[in-house]
Amino acid sequence: MKEYQPQSLVQLKALVKDESVYLGDIDTNLIADMSSLFEPDVCLVAVIAPFLAGIIK
Image 1 (tube, helix red, strand yellow):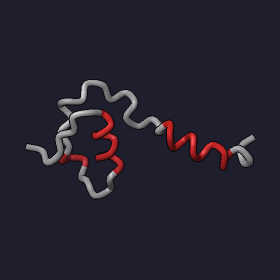
Image 2 (image 1 turned 135 degrees about the horizontal axis):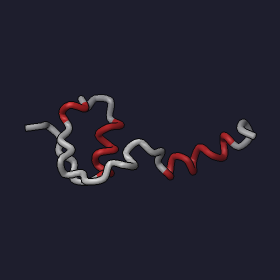
Image 3 (image 1 turned 180 degrees about the horizontal axis):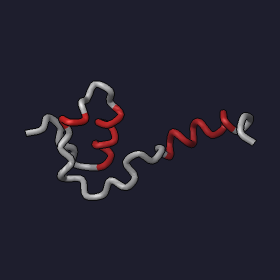
Image 4 (image 1 turned 120 degrees about the vertical axis):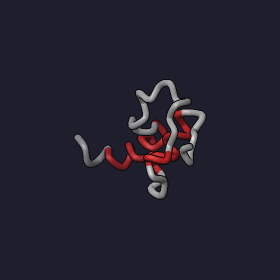
Protein backbone atom coordinates (compact mmCIF):
# COMPACT_ATOMS: atom_id res chain seq x y z
CA MET A 1 0.00 0.00 0.00
CA LYS A 2 1.22 3.48 -0.88
CA GLU A 3 2.09 5.92 1.90
CA TYR A 4 -0.08 8.79 0.63
CA GLN A 5 -3.64 8.56 -0.69
CA PRO A 6 -4.96 12.06 -1.50
CA GLN A 7 -8.73 12.43 -1.70
CA SER A 8 -8.75 15.51 -3.95
CA LEU A 9 -6.72 17.31 -6.58
CA VAL A 10 -5.86 20.01 -4.03
CA GLN A 11 -4.34 17.41 -1.70
CA LEU A 12 -2.46 15.83 -4.60
CA LYS A 13 -1.04 19.21 -5.68
CA ALA A 14 0.21 19.80 -2.14
CA LEU A 15 1.96 16.42 -2.11
CA VAL A 16 3.55 16.99 -5.52
CA LYS A 17 4.91 20.37 -4.39
CA ASP A 18 6.40 18.88 -1.20
CA GLU A 19 9.97 17.97 -2.13
CA SER A 20 10.24 15.56 0.81
CA VAL A 21 7.50 13.33 -0.66
CA TYR A 22 8.68 10.60 -3.04
CA LEU A 23 6.23 10.65 -5.97
CA GLY A 24 6.22 6.85 -6.10
CA ASP A 25 4.63 6.82 -2.63
CA ILE A 26 1.47 8.60 -3.84
CA ASP A 27 -1.61 6.53 -4.73
CA THR A 28 -3.58 8.54 -7.29
CA ASN A 29 -6.43 6.05 -7.82
CA LEU A 30 -9.01 8.34 -6.17
CA ILE A 31 -8.19 11.33 -8.40
CA ALA A 32 -10.38 11.17 -11.52
CA ASP A 33 -9.25 14.36 -13.30
CA MET A 34 -5.60 15.42 -13.22
CA SER A 35 -5.78 17.72 -16.25
CA SER A 36 -4.92 20.82 -14.20
CA LEU A 37 -2.33 19.22 -11.94
CA PHE A 38 0.61 21.23 -13.27
CA GLU A 39 -1.20 24.45 -14.16
CA PRO A 40 -0.04 27.50 -12.22
CA ASP A 41 -2.09 28.32 -9.16
CA VAL A 42 -4.34 31.35 -9.72
CA CYS A 43 -3.39 32.85 -6.34
CA LEU A 44 0.31 32.64 -7.13
CA VAL A 45 -0.16 34.26 -10.53
CA ALA A 46 -2.17 37.09 -8.96
CA VAL A 47 0.65 37.80 -6.50
CA ILE A 48 3.49 37.62 -9.02
CA ALA A 49 1.82 39.42 -11.96
CA PRO A 50 2.29 42.98 -10.61
CA PHE A 51 6.01 42.34 -10.16
CA LEU A 52 6.36 41.05 -13.72
CA ALA A 53 4.36 43.89 -15.27
CA GLY A 54 7.39 46.17 -15.48
CA ILE A 55 9.62 43.45 -16.92
CA ILE A 56 7.39 41.84 -19.54
CA LYS A 57 6.12 44.17 -22.25
